[in-house]
Length: 579
Image 1 (cartoon, helix red, strand yellow):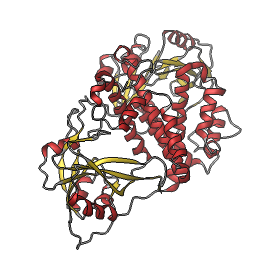
Image 2: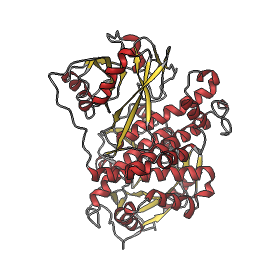
Image 3: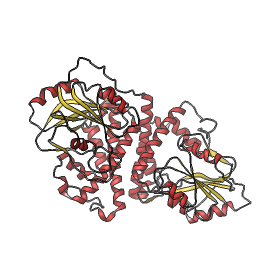
Image 4: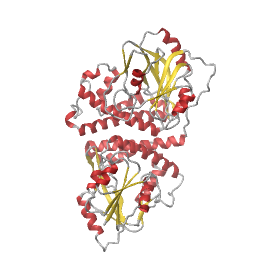
């Protein structure tokens, strides 16, 4: 008989399919969970599995803990992920092979067939995909590695013919979040072991003269990420050399998706080696006067790293309000230290979000309101221009210009951005979008204020520099792209009436989001036409990350179309939002 081990965290979408395939032929299924907040436990126990909680220790350490501490009694142990399904054919093969008493093998490699956006990936170097998952009790454990861990087996192993199905039903957003975590861990591993030809004794060798795993690991640690564009090599390897083109549209999308992951690893390796520091905090000037009739509203959630530098530059403003969404760090304490008023906000998943909620529920004492993010920093020139312009202005709002900083460098070129973030109190509010928790973001994403009167422009720029790192940047844009995809689909359903207040830029963006060419066009526009190449590595990385962002939006739109093919008039990609 076989005991099964499954490691979980919020797996209610995948777990029923995994457990159904294990029913009736395994002795016991152990579900080791690290704090799910969904129905994972309920599903596991309803299927007769033994549910065990253990604080997250890491991918390898969590499984080794289970192997060491659970009452595993069967002669054989099978480890599967919650998004993997054992097919009936593979089940019969497993039962036949472990029932052969004459075999000397103590472990078996299982093959995986990946599903991506509903299509099987049979090429791209992802099939076959061998993993040692079935072994005699006590004959194997995982190496000490934070990500992409392998099992170390004491004895011989064979390969099974029938594949299991790897199909994560949670969505593209979850896959990107997982890649964000994995790429951070892998970057740390590569930097950690770059000085050594081998991993610690507890792990598998990293050697040019070892087996296939050891050679691949040696190449990745010592050579691959020293290449000028490793992600380009990865795409060519998957799509051309490993014939990903035979998988059709799914093949090219999957190859690009994995190549983007490789790009994140390279970028995070550089981030680690740069050792970036937070923006300096300005000394408080006891003689500074509040000469600007503006209330600054700073929406926050766990911004203790960015907030001091932001608030230290706001002494000339009449009032500062920090709107917090339940920070668990020192954000609120820091805000009060700088004399800001702290307002608590809890989002119910619907309209209004944070900025509109403030406009509707707070009595402002100044004529003007500036919405400023915690990673945005005003300058003396900006404050001086406000002091000159606002008293005489008849406009209801002001467009502001932002200068990007990225990877420790000020970007003088490339794609800049502007926001209508300075508005006259009572002149309007941000556009209303009736969403139902499209993302976890409780603040307006890319909505613009809709104002009654005219708008002007402030020329002096605001610096934009998020010091929370690339992991935070990717996480935030992953949520942004999910929101954009859902808004696109919503706009299709509503038709042109929903775009009456759109700017010309908004009309172009939402008319092009579904197009395959938008991501590469944005990259070449930002990097070549707008001379982002003059900003060096940082300019290139920033332009490519933005192109990846648009690529992710398109994948998520396709995913939504596959979920509801009859509800989207653009299912073929031949029409646009504003047609």
